Image (cartoon, rainbow, N blue to C red; front, top):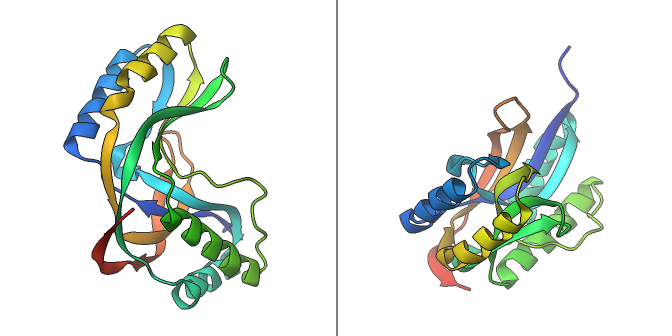
Length: 195
């Protein structure tokens, strides 16, 4: 039986510079032996809005809403601000790279809330914080080593990234991690803006 729902989210794909990809490899080596599921760089994105189970009938409506309701921004470059983690100090769950606070993210997030609310999808009740997930932490054998490694590696996760489009994704969960399929996308206007 075909599912009546798709697991969906809206995000901003991005590519990291070779220097930051090298830092990622160094970080992975330093934390080898810990149970961390590292995200493949081909799947890197900033999640603007996780929608979750979405009725198949709403998928096309969301795509149309994005095309008609979104004020399309210019392609934008934003500074990275180093490493961080989500979860409690004793039990971090995600290791991520942060971004400079930027109106670019806030305005897009607010517009998405407005567009989705018009379709009947409620806003999230938690504050939005733009980040790039590097890995999901299953468990750590040496918590002290984890935090010392993050602190030591932090300066290597500085630089700039460029955002060129917004994508409406389907996420299909699997044993090797989620697979992302493009449902719709909107290219940003040419003319780089720095934030």
